[in-house]
Length: 380
Ligand SMILES: [Zn+2]
Image 1 (cartoon, protein in one colour):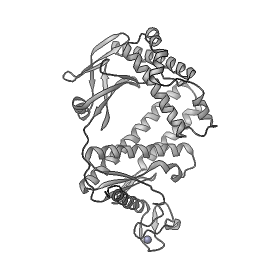
Image 2 (cartoon, helix red, strand yellow):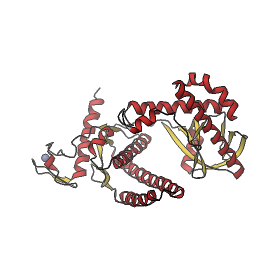
Image 3 (spheres, protein in one colour):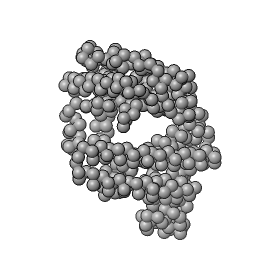
Image 4 (cartoon, protein in one colour):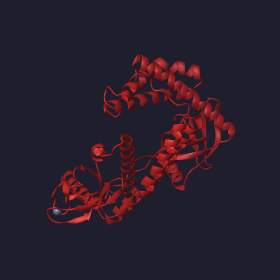
């Protein structure tokens, strides 16, 4: 399994200046490469290198490796854009957002992350420092720090590229680690997980993870955002950005904690985990404001990803199921009826009279669909 470990660099002001100059040069170079790629409609690494490599090295003072990484970064960005366009993630062919994205070259922020391979970045784990290539020469002995668990992963399993990341005045390295796969335990039944807004996650065992705290923070931030957006000053914009990040971190922490509890619960009981397939989430979560749908859909995807990753590390089976009608179906008799769910919280079967919290009932349906799906896919 591939993971990303983040360490913080404890750079001196001189080192920080060299890193900043390097990142700026790399992203200016990426902008140039991107323009050439766009003009020539040339998006393949090999071809693009022919048109840009020498220029990038000469104009921006980048070394051979750094130049290749810049070109690769541009190719990757276009590949992601084209995949998003093909998947319809930027709207219909006539939408403003899509037309805008299609008709200009991708541009790179001056502080956008830059990939490094082992030739430009080396790790000294005993004295916990890195040596890194910059436009001002190779910097040696930059100290780094991280959580004990992350540092241990780094020493044992680091492999491949790392990204140099600049965020809010701090320098980080995002290193790739390859952790050996844990064999999946044959599950004795499934824990179903229903995702929602009032309750972020509810399990078929009846554990509800409330969204109250998160929704309150989101509401507070929304109010603040409205006030700041009205100001339109530079400092207001900066503050907005910081707020957005803070909210995202808060949401991520909550998702981490919920995912951990769900996986631990399943692991203890020897069960697998059944999650909703989120491809239909936009249709299922009916909300007035589109950005809210995006926000929640994004958060659900993150929670799903955290569960999948923690489960994989614990050898817990995960299955994704079609969650259509799980909120209207009776988990005892299977009867499907919209009137089974008179309000947000209540489920009462109009056929057999079974009553349960609506989210718990939905989670039970997801659990049994998970068990059925597993039986089918592991029949052989
Ligand atoms: Zn029923």
